[in-house]
Image: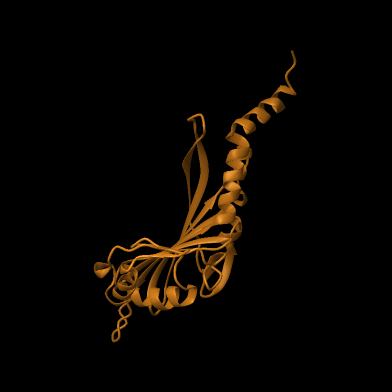
Length: 228
């Protein structure tokens, strides 16, 4: 059953007209799916360039008019016994400008195969898991487009009422993708897309290797080569 505060209507109206400076604190939760399927990866000019799980080498060949630089980095995962293990990640930045906006795209990748075998450290071992788009609206003269206009017409009127609105982020989720959208001010918007399928595979790999059962299975395999 939906839970909605009275201020959500005020927040949406003010947010669409004056930006976050006039937005009241509000919450909204709904279990209904978005009215339109969420993007299943990196979409550019309405074309799906890379689905979730596409490997890094293939994505870099797809980026138009650019020789992208890949930034490799690590995040940490804490196991049940308190140990910290690395998760290999990579990021590619891509920017483009059109008549209405200046756009910065951050493509994030994760190396799930490395969790099973540390020899898996090639570019095709990294798969697309997240896309973060930062949008700066250009001066359009009269009328001037605002972040509230974009959220109203390109988010709310396309995907419907968010499943959750926490006063800052509009949250949407379907079977493949989680999408969060927020306006920073009248001219700036962030769209954050994350693959639920890749996230599930990552969690499965961590459980396979670092759970008590996974550790015990690995020990048993090692014992097969042990000569007493």
